[in-house]
Amino acid sequence: MKIQDNYDEQFIIYSDKYEASRVVADEMCNVIEEIGLAGGLPVLGLATGATPEIIYKYLIEAYQKGKSFAKTICFNLDEYYPIQKENPNSFYYSMYKQLFNYIDIPDNNIHIPHIGTLDTPLHDFCKDYENKINQVGGIDLQILGIGENGHIAFNEPGSDFNSLTRLVDLDEVTRKNAAADFGGVSAVPNQGITMGIQSILQAKKIILLAFGENKGRIMNRLLYEPITPDLPASFLKLHSNCQFVLDEACAKNIKYMDIT
Ligand code: PGA
Image (cartoon, rainbow, N blue to C red; front, side, top):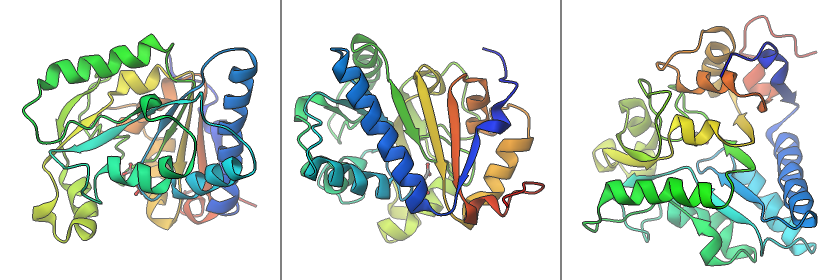
């Protein structure tokens, strides 16, 4: 893969996160429609966290207006390890609460790298997750957030370009940012299961979203710094079909960027 000459043109700024989320939700619906019309099964890569919440509201709205997700296949990026499905902080729980409970996607089409606390062979689980993505022809559209430390999914700083789905140690920044939800940093799991950098880069199209002032600093780094494992999101500059979608609150903290 080579660095894309025009990746900076792929920074797209919307006035606020609602407008941006509307555009991305529409794009997801278009992918579902186009692939469905061609007789295929659309495959979406989904993220958790605050960033995609509004997108999921719009997808539920689309369902209520007649859109069907019955033939859509979803893969989620990551999950804490260990954690119970019933824990409201698990990504499993939040995906059902924010989206899956309200649309017609069958449970069989939902994939979340949730392994629970059982003594399951992790290596086999991770390998199987990759196989499942490949068996359905890869991810058509991958949605991503970004951590303040530059992580994508739980690919923390230091992640390998060739990494696939695996168990990782969570970065201190990631654990601190999750502390409020868990009622203290000591309650945040130390590890997570995550799709790797390669698993993500294999998606046909990627949209990374960054909303709010707090994400300005990392998006500034992403725009100007070279590709390095210290900033895992920088690997996305190698992808030929990746957009970076920002709201103005985030973009105004990017140096030299003209948002008028
Ligand atoms: P956020 O998390 O959407 O809650 O900001 C993004 C991330 O850490 O990847």
